[in-house]
Length: 236
Length: 359
Image (cartoon, rainbow over all chains, first blue to last red; front, side):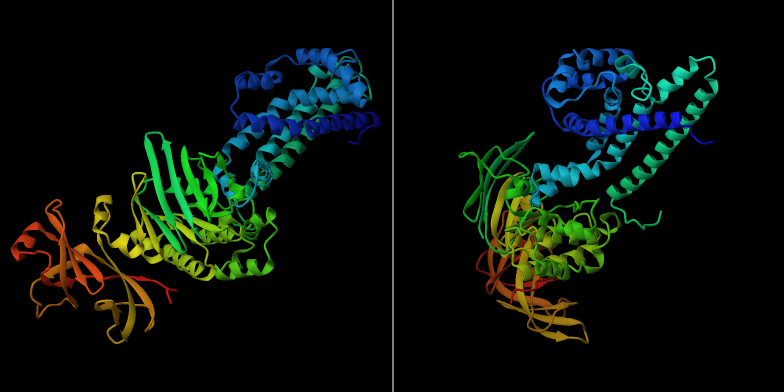
């Protein structure tokens, strides 16, 4: 089975949207996860709940909020366009934003869990060896959280590939711009002759998910072994 | 090097109130588990922030509650070897050892090579901490702390989680380090043997407070140690003067006489440190004959302690050394023991603590 030009375009767009959504949200997710895992501050519970909101809200609602905030006339959308020239409305960047927001809680949860299981005594040991707070974070905390970070990346990436409701509400369904894999499948199912195309795209989605799962499994296993301190050639 | 510690800290119901000074060599913080020893070293390292007090290293206050001084841990330049090693699991041995180099001017190659050589780490460099034995881990942890170029090294029960064999292995390396690198060490332990073997100064800590401070010989020989539920006894620095290979016996000379001891793994002329427990010493008024005991020393009775659960400790001066004997109150009464009496100390057992590098 070889892909048609249209299918390639859809696949590439989906991967691009997911890739950028993960890349941009990762630093924020790590910061929020660290805050939730380590800091105590007033309103932490509310903050925690807000971060998790996209997980429980109907995606359409999230998409609608994004439209209100980041649309051309939205308060944030206007500012971002003015300052940085970034436009989200009806662009693939908007699809990436929607995917990033929807995947954010999943990423935060995985990374936070990882931070919480780190032996903090190792951080104290690092500080006795001359490492300041930022150095401790960069050389001990972050590397030890790697398995959780990889898991978070995968969950968010997969969530981004499957994102539908928020995307279609926020940036509509524009071929070549915002029509990602799920939106394309949906579109074909709405066309009288689109059954075969919908099935083909669905199969692509299955293969893509399997590949992503497999790759992340390999990476997590490797990273876990690393942070457990085993030699690469150790017997099992 | 001088270290002055004078701190107060409340940990739940536990009150830490510790003051002592330490100089060159090895200072042992000695006391039972839960006595607050680790809290004291944590305060020195800046991991624990005491409620009140001062900690001064070489005249530089690193903590002073009155003047609001609290130098952060990374800038205190204090090496810390933890009970559980705490090697970074995601780094190999070499990277662990070089970790401190990331934050200072870097470790000169000669120093790295020296520490690796000294602690026997050459074959471990590419290994990961997960594949090291407990003893190897502690050696790497000691090397890692040394390579941070500390002005003071803290060792918190570094042998506690090791089996007897590993213990003696690591202990040898610690002695080697003490003698070779000449870095002041604060050594936390609840094990009498370790303290006797390593320490120059002993700070006895009981329930968060300093019960005694002084030279190792004085504190470890002190019968008041009983109050801390440690065995009283005497610690004697001696020298090997004769080795009888045939009977595996060595004669040790000390300031007051000689002792015959088995299994001495030391050359003639080498210094050794022996410990004689109070309950291994009996008292006789006349020199006994036809007796299996090898070591019988004449001395002058100095003191009979107050009774404690049917027993008394008798101090006997033998030359410059004071031996202690724990006997029942009845024996003491029957013999009519009183200060000034000339007596014989019958020593049933001598335990040996090799002490190298005392020149």
